[in-house]
Length: 63
Image: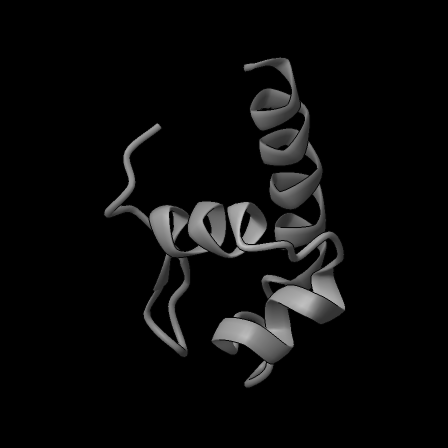
């Protein structure tokens, strides 16, 4: 995973920022939105973010 790749362009939120938020305890899209603002502007990335968060959580739980 490229940590510097943008997942939410409106708020410049990267994959790494989302991973860090998950490691800090965020478990849902809403928690990610509140922690780092991803998906709170135009909302076009919300569906993508939900899948990304799910996949990241699964990967982190495997480790």
